[in-house]
Length: 428
Image (cartoon, rainbow, N blue to C red; front, top):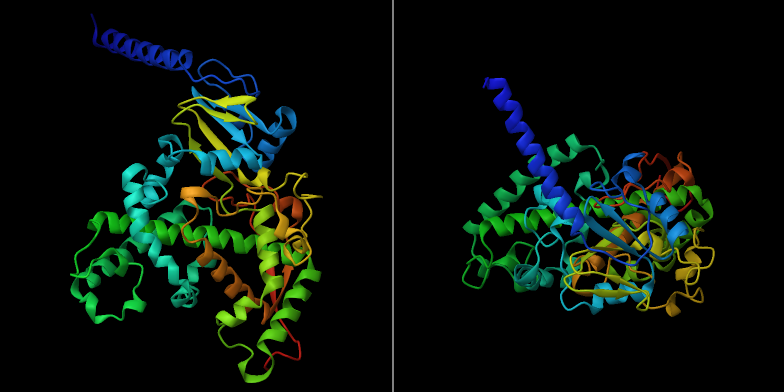
């Protein structure tokens, strides 16, 4: 027997074994009575999504129109269900005994965040969350310095740019951990603890290993910067497309910050509390374009959906699709319209149907930095709108082309112009 013959035979055995494994996985795949597109053997519905990459939110809106508010598809043998109603969101995000993340949905994140809060699960996640959560109980002590991180508004979906940022970030985090090891914790005022400080005890010992601290800091910086930058980009684009709401925000900031030398002073808590129109604009933008489009839930047991009509079987993954949840006409009339009045007094926001609006998720996996993110966005808008008029060079149709990924990034660049204001309240 020649060497080539042996090679071909070996290759044939490998291919045959792989086909046997994939066939077994396909035959034993989880099944559900929820409707969805017809899957192909072994491939499932992958060809449906391959036709037009990247996969965008509108692809799922089309599936929702075809199959209803609960539908399913297969990625190979992996069963994915999509839920878009508040009652299902409550059951999945709050009602499950322990909301877990499936390796299928977190594997891509591991290279960027390590085993941080987004990826970790079980007892490890619970322990880390308990340690980290107190960091965000006093956000006001560090949201102003956070705005000095220039790259919060320069992130792009380009893989090479993200890789370069990760290299820089890794060096910063390692240096921070080294400095933290050298200083005495008790020398710091108790109310001035930083994100890293809460990870060491009163004797200066780390509550987490150095690698775990490293992973959590990377998770915090990436999650906070990328999601907030994405949200702010959409907010500025919407303001450029709706100048009447720019007028409303600028009238509000002019009244709050006054005139003269102190007009451009840093915003303080009492200022931010008065920014009602600004907050309504942020909330409406997050309704239309939540920074994280999907909240995935691993079904560790059979989960009934749509009042028991369908079942998410054990081993499947359910996507609580926030973009679709937020545009249910039963809860948000004229759901595609940008109308911040919904979140102003008398606009119905106080009577929202429970779990119909979840820009930061819900339940045990509620975004740990939700309030922090709102403070950053309000502070940024107050700062920018005092100084500039925003003109959008993109269309609403372009803005709607949102890629379904870790964060909901527009497929096309968001193009805006910042024109210095010439209002009489501005200092020359």
